[in-house]
Image (cartoon, rainbow, N blue to C red; front, side):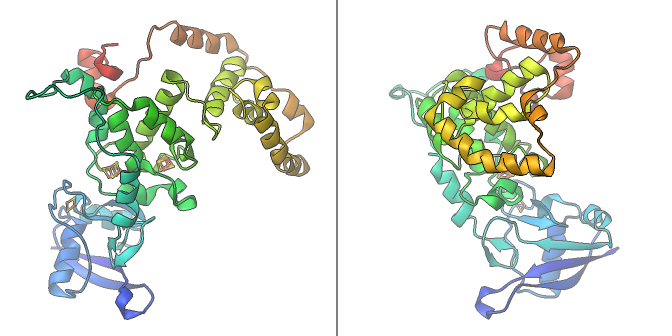
Length: 365
Ligand code: SF4
Ligand code: SF4
Ligand code: FES
């Protein structure tokens, strides 16, 4: 049976010492998990290693760690694969990021993850009194849209990987926002607009995500938290027309309007458009928009000095040679009576071929 080198990050707050790396060896077949390796080391070499785990089957969500720098579940990562991807064969195991370390590989989920989940009102607020003495029956197809968000096991792996949260620890974050979509997409909930207005207006809410895809890449349950955040944004801007003071509405509309007009992004116009409703004029005429633009002037001046921005680039932007095609796509989409979204989580590639595409809200596209 092969030997695997495990380099584990150790930290005991009671010792008063700084965190350090310790090396161990586990003897296991390659298809066993990194968690099995850690538990073997704990059993044979050092019982004091702190790790949280329970199901060992990617269900309970308690064994989130960083293996070779990547956030994931230790029970869901084969030790042979982890050794192969580690350049020198030595598998590094550290506690998850963006959360305080309690001991060794155990982080304080309560202080960050669960606090953020509490923030989004993680329960259904019924639109009407549930029927007395009966089940509140919902057509199964009406729940398809939230199935992906419901798959979350609250392991915190996406929270650990979130780059926005590294910069802004107050960001509500991928897991909690995916949870928010679970209620915004639920037809029984009566607070859709209030929830969206709250999350759009919060400076650490839906517009604080930078689309880095890290949460999508690491999630062991394919919840794709960033996709849920984008759905929240679409609901806020398109369905409820929520104009927030974080310029999220203006930014989304500015982006779309520029692509429709030019085919590629005219960056010099994106900022002024974002400060309004997405159009060029309104952003600059709004007193708050004009104020924000003035505040950005030093950045524009720095751009000019470094040669990144020129008066020509700031004023002119070429259209794509075949811009008509882009407009045609816009017209085609706008002619649809309702917005259709692919729910690939439910359908998958094979289902798409065989049965047609299941769209948001359970509609066949
Ligand atoms: S896509 Fe957004 S929520 Fe996901 S990790 Fe990146 S910044 Fe965080
Ligand atoms: S969204 Fe995925 S990674 Fe994030 S907590 Fe839920 S299951 Fe874990
Ligand atoms: S031990 Fe339950 S998810 Fe890993």
